[in-house]
Image 1: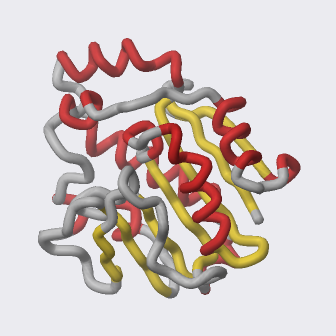
Image 2: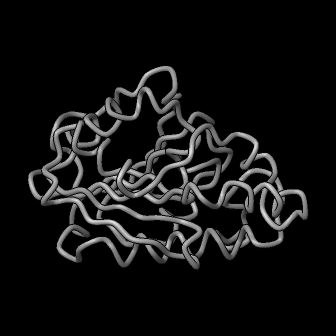
Length: 199
């Protein structure tokens, strides 16, 4: 089965394929071209790593709490529950880019500083951490969309916390990223936010 035909998220939702595509497209545009000769780690990629299957990098790595049934060729898969241990099984400076697309809202916010610090440890100097997450104001709208089966109810029900851009900036700063090297923005009509932190 081709990557585009596999589900990028658990559960069902009419808009899920489109939303996964928009997240992947946003992340693609945030990654500097010079990083693509290195390694990328996609954290919390889901049972099918949609973004990794569609991005171009010399080496690709995935982390999720669930094992993949059939990961695409060329992706090294690692099982890790970040709510239990935010420590990555990789040496320091191993990756050019770490991505977390629609992930942090599922995690314990008390562990987010440690997770961002770990992301900073495994990227090279000049490397980047790219995240997307629903904007805090969109929580009620997403719950309604889940009831209407426009988005995955399983995914929405597992949201633990909702973030604002200043709060994401605070977490990155507390993890040791220079504030001058953090960029933010919104996409999907302001329903989601993105952030890039560089080392």
